[in-house]
Image (cartoon, rainbow, N blue to C red; front, side, top):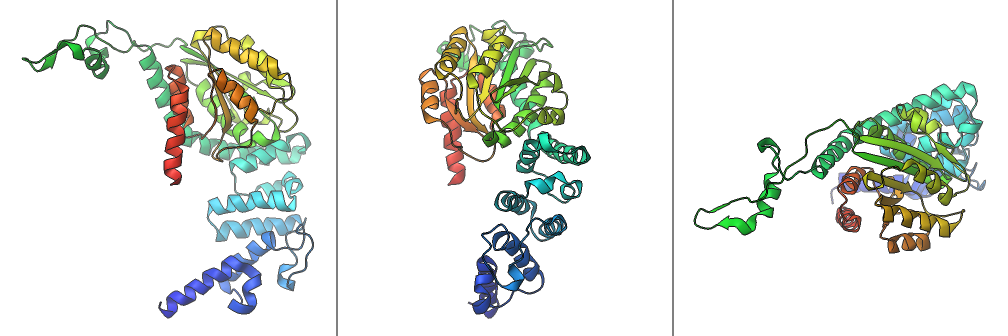
Amino acid sequence: MTDAAAQERLRRWRMVLGGAAEKSLGKAEGRDGAMDSALAALYEGGAGDGGEERSNRRSAGLGGSAPKVARWLGDIREYFPSTVVQVMQQDAIERLDLSRLLLEPEMLSAVEPDVHLVGTLLSLNRVMPEKTKDAARQVVRTVVEQLEKRIEQKTRAAISGALNRAARINRPKHADIDWNRTVRANLKHYQAEHRTVIPERLIGYGRRTTAVQRDVVLCVDQSGSMAASVVFSGVFSAVLASMKSLRTSLVVFDTAVVDLTEQLDDPVEVLFGTQLGGGTDINRAIAYSQQLITRPRDSIFVLISDLYEGGIREQMLRRVAEMTAAGVQVVVLLALSDEGAPAYDHDNAAALAALGVPAFACTPDAFPDLMAAAIERRDLQTFVAAHQNEAQGKRL
């Protein structure tokens, strides 16, 4: 190993180990020193960290000083990429109880907007002073616009394609023939001497129509553990509501039920209409959602919840069974986020699976394909298995 490589290796170890390695590996200087101080203020600071004394340089921490935190937020945005900044912000909120500082407008102007920060702001909505709300709305709008860019095009393409495929007809015009399916359906009519298939039955797509083809009801648990799912659900609901071929409703719940359908033209208003926190009454939310379903066989009901039921469990399961028996395509998502598998009620998930309704976590990138599968009434168990296998392959 060259001297330069050895020095770089020691430098990296010094940055990883922090102040504990200062005596053996030396003091971090220059930009490294600034990065080290920013990390130490959060992860080694005395305030909010048990009060344990470090060296003088490291004992101050972030504490509860708004100016000090604002400077720290500016520092980490300068020295670290945005993905690292978001993690550090979230750690600061959790480790040092900085939520109350987010009620100050100058603090919000310094943060890096992301889904978790939006979740924190929504949980503070009821105690947020008027002077802060405009700044908070701007943070939320920035994240909403980022998410819309990420999901809108794929969602529209996947759902429009699924609706067209679901409207297949058997006497299509030439331009509407689905040749792949037509050939597969007529392979028994293959003429060996002519080396071709003589189709007895043509399969095509239905004509495009502006009529509502599917009703979609999203029913979202707004308990505190579901913050990221609430944010993604609000944005997806707004995208779905903008598609004329769908009639989209959004219901959020804790122990009460709130219908936010009328606000779907503005996802920021949707998110500020939620009240993160509180208990959970899934049964009551499903009961309300059932009233919105007037065309069962053309309806998709999406429940997004960790399934910790505070209401009447037996009635909840009976209502799900009633919907599936009537022809409603029921989907249960334990989370709609990038965070992976959440904590959830395994007994309720197993009971739903016994009704033929799988419960699983879904990433935002997979949600459009899930909705397409539901529109086409494909076997969702198969979709879940394929989705989980794909996710596992990416991790490997």
